[in-house]
Length: 477
Ligand SMILES: *Cc1c(COP(=O)(O)O)cnc(C)c1O
Ligand SMILES: [Zn+2]
Image (tube, rainbow, N blue to C red; front, side, top):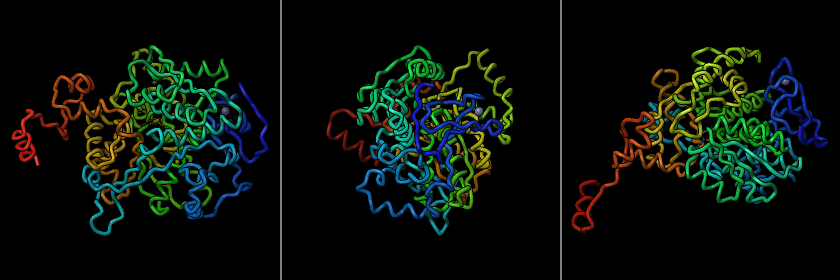
């Protein structure tokens, strides 16, 4: 493929995830799939030849060195667990300074214990919207971008429902090391995300099609023009996204929670989380692995359909690919398109599907699908608790509520929901949910099958008269 540079780091390489193939490639090679079998690639390490701390507490000593960019970054302060690039090549903009918050309001909504009393269970929100570009994507972008930089790339591209492009555009804009080329579908991307890509100066290619179309095209174009691809088929991106789990553990004083609940789109996050726990367990840094719940939207439910309905499994890497092929054939025949208000997970052909099956295997995982109504109701609860997220993120909370109702999650469990993106990414959906204007509601949400806004916080309209304004405040407070 396009570029290849010689590196000295023979403890790090890329390896095909299919165990019966297992082909390996140099860490300096640029590829998004296995040359032998077409499978996905992992970044693999020979840990016993690398310096790995013997306790996760070791990382705490970096807190005292926050003046150093590699210690300040919530991704690179875990460099020893993703040691694929030399420190001097790392490109960081302070990503990953996010927080985990216990949230009783959302716990009550989901049906979990609150912090009243001595229980350690409850609902925790990992707020990845605090990243520099407003979504978790920065965790992965700093890693992919660093790899691109080590191999000397001059252009980087992605297809995006919005957040990947915002993130790539930001890293290019700040570092000036590369030009960003982004591919978006038409009419789908939210204004918050589009405005970032345009503002940060990315070359923006708007394709007459949806995300799945854009994804296919960007693969062809990057291959042909030798542009570095930063979608989550890029194995280095997932290395950065592992650190979301390290920070969750760190915030829980290195205790492993019972559940990690995450929305599923291209399935990069869920795949990265599975790899993170697999490695931590192999390294003896944790003694238990949490369960993983991946939440699809009903209108983009490939993983749910294949895993829960058709029973497809990782099966030690012997995946029954015919089941997948048959499902995609059906989808093609019916010309079925992904459709959900949660645009960040509006994806029917998740590129990391096989890796996600592995993660579900490692973490004894489950998959659920939630409606746009459930997503927006859950989102309003997150907002009311003062954190705020975009619709896709709230699928995690809606999914946790569903699993709690089914009795799969217990009231005393410690549950971590990942809030993948910031509330301001998609104000249209939020305003429409809270609006008093029925026409606006129908236009934006009714068309998605959303019928009511049970938790709407509606603006109170008053004439411009002091008495009336005072009366309205007294009536409503
Ligand atoms: C990208 C994205 C997702 C989907 O994550 P995957 O790793 O592709 O499954 C979910 N929520 C938000 C806000 C995103 O930007
Ligand atoms: Zn292979």
